[in-house]
Amino acid sequence: MITTARQLKDLIRNMSKKKSADAQILMRNYMMERFLERISLSEYKNQFILKGGMLVAAMVGLDARATMDLDATIKGTNVSVEDVEMIISQRKELHHE
Image 1 (cartoon, rainbow, N blue to C red):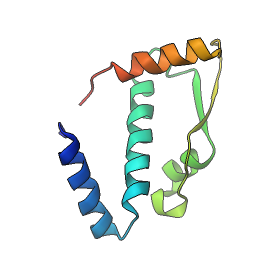
Image 2 (spheres, rainbow, N blue to C red):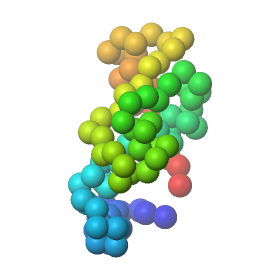
Image 3 (cartoon, rainbow, N blue to C red):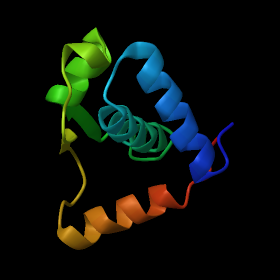
């Protein structure tokens, strides 16, 4: 389990060397995947529909397509700035191994 920023940076650096991949892309995708994991464990899991580059990367692998963002449709929930900020804030507070 990663418990410090240093451990995460070391892991990303080692993976970058091992896979000959850009460390920045690995870090960005790690963060997006962790966010998606938190959504998948929440009461909003059936309301977020993943699409775009992140969906393609999840289906065919990171090397096939590097994406800069996470595209999703949210169904059955208000999508005002305040509501989305609340959803994200609740996910940040979720502790998961």
